[in-house]
Image 1 (cartoon, rainbow, N blue to C red):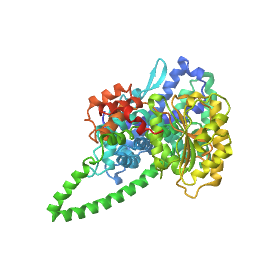
Image 2 (cartoon, rainbow, N blue to C red; image 1 turned 30 degrees about the vertical axis):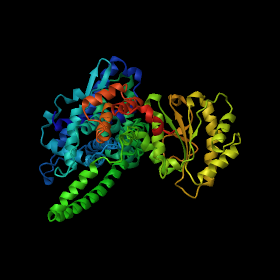
Image 3 (cartoon, one colour; image 1 turned 180 degrees about the vertical axis):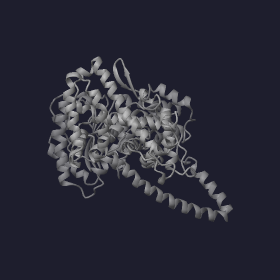
Image 4 (cartoon, rainbow, N blue to C red; image 1 turned 90 degrees about the horizontal axis):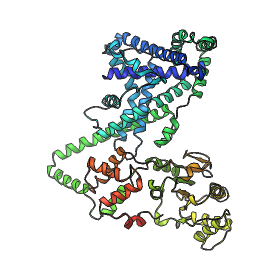
Amino acid sequence: MTIGRSLCRVAIYGGICFGASVLLPELAIPVAFLSTEKGQDILTKVGEMISGVTAGNTANAIDNFDRSRGSDYVRLENEDLIRVCGKAIAQIIHLAAQNSNNPYSKHLKMIAAKATENWVELARSEFAQSKYQELTEGEIPLIITPTEEGLTQAEILTVEEWRTILAKLDLMAVDSAEGVDLPDYVRQYVAELLHKEFPRVLREALKQDFKADGKAFAGLMLQLITGIRQQVAELGELAPICLAKLEQIEQQLTGTEQEIQELFIDISDRMQTGFEQLCHEFGLLETNINKNLQTIRESLVEIKEDTTVIRQDTTEIKESLASMQDELSKVRQDIQSLNQPHPGETTEEKLLKALLNLDYDKQANLFKEFVENHQIGACLVHGSCESAPRWLLNRLIRNVPNGNTSNYVKQIKFSRRINTSSLERLFQEISRKICRVQTSSVAAIYEKILEVWQSETVILIIQNTQNVEESYIEEFLQKFWQPLAELASQKGTTDKNKSLLLFLLDEDGDSNDWNIVYTQDPTSDLIPKTMIKFMEIQPIKPRQLSSWLELDICARNLLQYSDRLVDEIFRDSQNGLHQHILETICSLCQIEWEDYVSKWMKY
């Protein structure tokens, strides 16, 4: 399929998504009727009509050349709809750039920053060079397909077609002479993400644009209403009600700008997309697409300025080196020397550095944002034992800002089983660790913690949460942590770099069933009284494993990279379970995990 055909399919799908979002729900046709044979037939015709109106708009766009703008310029009548498709594509590429271990993140953000405008420009250019009939012949039936079960949405584009679009946007975003050649695994990852998430992100982009500037879509909606009347008239006894609803919507669309905007705001408020959850999965805190794209466009300006400075510096260096060939040879030797492993760095040290970069990006990014915004807070680290939540806990503790593990208060481990519903034994355990005496006086415990906190970071770790009931954990938070957090907030410290942190460690995944109040917003005002819950650790995917092995393990000359190595480790790790990966990598590097685990995981 050509790039032009792909553009056409995305444009038509945008219209279908628009119609399904704004028009069909407004008719309020009973689900019971839609499940009948006649209901399915009418729904199919309505879907084809919506796609037909969008296809007609695309045809008009191709026929309407603005010669004053040049032979490659097409005036798109439904440009707002095409632009919102571009926003969705840009947002997904931006999500793909969130992986902190991806060395090509900056380049992907550069593509995303320009993707919206480049998508519109691409539509103009490609439509101008193609015949509409060639683009759309047979495409609508592939996008909207009636089956025995009803109207179904076939895939918009294949992964390979999304790869072609990404390559085109890449070429348009960066000067080919100065660009970065994205490796195959990066292109494949982004294409798969576009293939999977485009429908959801497009609905969110429509939802947000409806609320911000709904009147821009009023014309297209009026066209849909005109085209849908005939199908609605065939609804039998439902027809009068639906036709009256269409007339009511039409009156709003031909009313004042305020009335039009109110209609689209109402539609937007009722749309559910799941986009916020998607952002959390990628560790992206901002869920407003326009703000995200504005942020990366602003960062693009900074990147350009940095690039200009680098180019100037490079020119000066080249001019100097032209008359200093002997020095150049020495510099090259020095560079080669720097690229070699540090002579004092052992295999164990290199391996530890690599293992600390294994996955957990979502949790690590959320924690980073959390500790940057809060001096005091409680966190829940959770996952099955095989997903190695304890390894994640130790990694997070290493990343406490301005901290040094040797300077922390001695770790508070509540590793003994609490077999009573009373908190008294737990308070005695805390006092034994902190106050060096066994007492259940909470006031004495608070006094000691706050005293130490004035000069050191304090970290409390609650383990074995699987051994106690949810009500016990909730009671502990209410009667111990929340009063301590409030008291600490009031008293404060002279050194704002000292943190007071509580970690709850769930190694069985029991916390998934808890109804305890928590937040996943690291900037929430509910913190520090309310704990922040990290995303549950999911098995690592083969592509993520491949990238980590290449960039961290093999780059440090610990192993020799090959596809066979990736397959072997993935298989031996029971399809991506972190604990098995850690142990397997150590074994392949001739290191016994058990010999180093106590040293690497102090907590």
